[in-house]
Image (cartoon, rainbow, N blue to C red; front, side):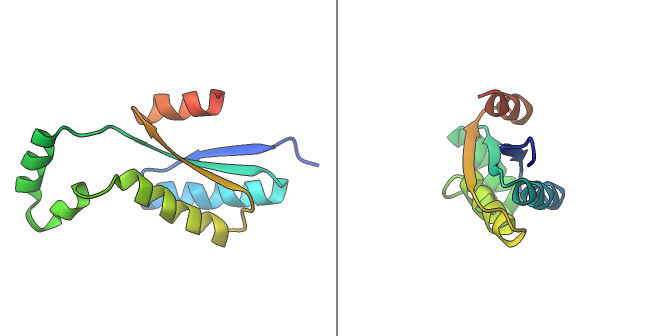
Length: 107
């Protein structure tokens, strides 16, 4: 029996962070542990979104619409299921990534 009952992994939607999700999912599956996938976000003020949209042009869809963190954890969950994780929790956490992940792990 493994000492792990819960495995926490953060993702920002990058390919390298999704590889971390894959590895954490395999670890959680092997241990029979719950996998917690987290994505931190800092809400943008409307003025900043407008300025960024002007600069991004056709790629502005990346900063509009529903919270991108929700899409990121949804994709990460799909990868985790494919990697064999059984029990999965997803969390979007408001705040800076490092501090948010540490707080989540402590909680």
